Length: 181
Image (tube, rainbow, N blue to C red; front, side, top):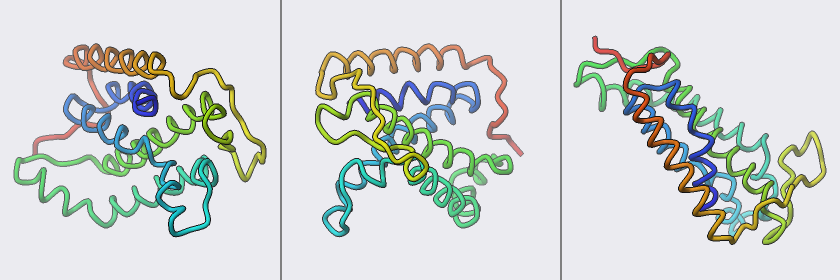
């Protein structure tokens, strides 16, 4: 719950960039990527990786975000537009889909790393988020990972902020919007 709450907090600026429904979709996408660094828990059954190892680094999250966004922009964009937008008379601004995917993966992954830096030492080894540039663990140990109060409190704050942002979004001008042809 804490990782999703942190992703919600980090995704708040989406309401200033994307328009209404697209903001909501971006927030949902960022939430779905909030557990990206924990892919090591799945990979360790087939690869010799440890929890809070290489997948819990800025380099890993950035590489996954970049490769995925480029694949979507150059491999799937025309198909996605055809399926969801063209029939309804919408077009997507150039590079908006790349920004959406790259930003969502980066935001979800970085929010996870940040949450682990605040809380990880009570349940696992501290993370080394800046490896290979800085080869030392980094943690603050500010939040107890298993605390229901912290997790529920952060989730309540995140949901409240998004509800207010969604309400205020109705009259905002956004740099990236879906446009009718």
